[in-house]
Length: 250
Image 1 (spheres, rainbow, N blue to C red):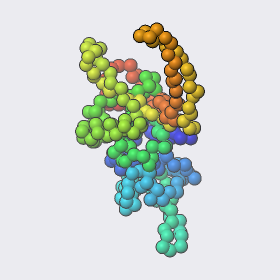
Image 2 (cartoon, rainbow, N blue to C red):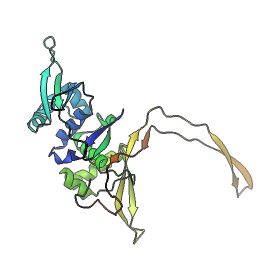
Image 3 (cartoon, rainbow, N blue to C red):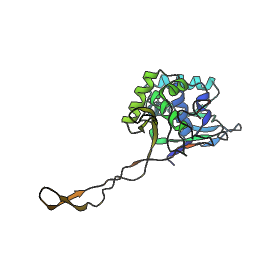
Image 4 (cartoon, rainbow, N blue to C red):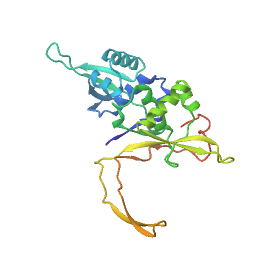
């Protein structure tokens, strides 16, 4: 499957953008076994982690994993042996958070396309997404507060995600004054399997008032491989305006 689940407690772990990106990628990998404590056993190269998390240096990846080890989220079990000078693949035990208190879906295919700060904002929007309304509407201030980024960085990153077609943005008008825009509404863009298919051209005729004749025109329609679908799985009430109350997000 192209989707995997992450716990709603992800943003309460105190991880920075790089740690969050690496931890989310490790959680997305299929487990080859389970430890006695329930941790998932995975095998992956540090170079592969760097490529999929937007981190160029394997040394940086090693330092990030060391920090995850200190927080009890990962544990290096062993490293496979190869002939010198080649070095083997690491085998990790990844402790994933419980999904019983709520979870959200993430698209696996975004890995390798986003840098850590983009991944952090993307994951936050996936977490805040309401399946009942088909959107999320957290303000820039909410996102900045929950992710620890500056508001200017959040605005820049959201613009990059919109330009890359990872999310879509709509502007909502005020109920009191329709000329004024108030909140931004976001939707998560999902990948669809298959190729772009070109539908049969449909000919239709329109009336030209100037000449009094019927004109023939052709209109072509296309199906795109990306489509908007529901993401968040929660049991909360999102019926009020503005950002969700209390914790500013769910």
